[in-house]
Image 1 (tube, rainbow, N blue to C red):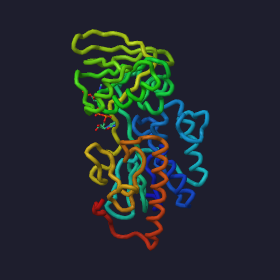
Image 2 (tube, protein in one colour; image 1 turned 180 degrees about the vertical axis):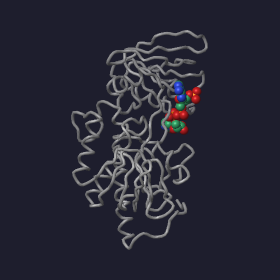
Image 3 (cartoon, rainbow, N blue to C red; image 1 turned 90 degrees about the vertical axis):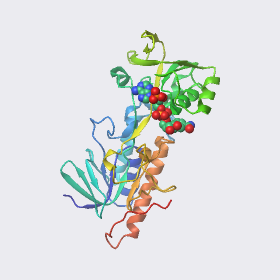
Image 4 (cartoon, helix red, strand yellow; image 1 turned 45 degrees about the vertical axis):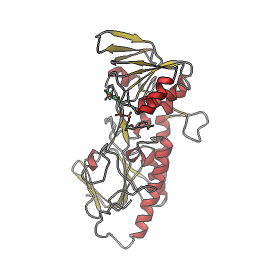
Length: 327
Ligand code: NAP
């Protein structure tokens, strides 16, 4: 067992590392348990490690590569004394102070915990989809739509995300094919109406993408019509996969309050969870904005919330601590 830390941060995307910058500058010597490189869900650096160029993070006039941006976040937090453990939290016990967290058999203790484990976009599970991720395959239209000006592209999915992304992408692309596995959309009526009215959007019903084609960049898709059994090729320069996201919250089940969808519940306007002294920031508690800059902003909030919590509990650990939810 290690010493009791003031702050342990779980996760190392923009939210976790911003919390690390702030808490380390406040001399709280945070330990960042950053995830495992082999993991598809919580690899160190988070979702930006799976993207290429980031053009919408303020401050970078010419854009920056996602992995490079995260390396800078990490180095900046290290400069002020953040320490890193490249591992995954396997179990937590937040029922008493100090909080207890395990990485395998090794126990860590902390007076406050900042949860920044993020979310992951669901993908189709095709080998070439993974190979071309960030090279024409994307899970974020807001991030990557701009690169497809004047191109023909496709979106997979039939929910609100898919239609929202398709409509957004028509600002750039000449044509957007929405490929959906059924004949009926799951999306809300209003989104359906908007998408049907949009002349640049074409629907490909009862169909699933079975392969992504291209060497170094996407050149097309193989699409199977499940009602006729026919396979065809669709020449597109980009594929946006919009079949939903899942937050990385399995380890907190039964401990932290979460929505049915698994997103952590935080008190509006703060990063406080239902356990006093445990804070959550970034995509793990945000299914609306999901941007690097909003995650970073909430990471800053979590750091300030944790710092203030520590200041107000200077007299030592108190009894616990399940705050009744009153928001
Ligand atoms: P969602 O509602 O779960 O829709 C996922 C879509 O992807 C469904 O159409 C589903 O098909 C399809 N899908 C799932 N797995 C697939 C696979 N393996 N292959 C092909 N297609 C697959 O997810 P979402 O669209 O991300 O929305 C999540 C929540 O956020 C919803 O409550 C939504 O209303 C909300 N949201 C709201 C807005 C808005 O109001 N502006 C925008 C975005 C999201 P099936 O239909 O056949 O299951």
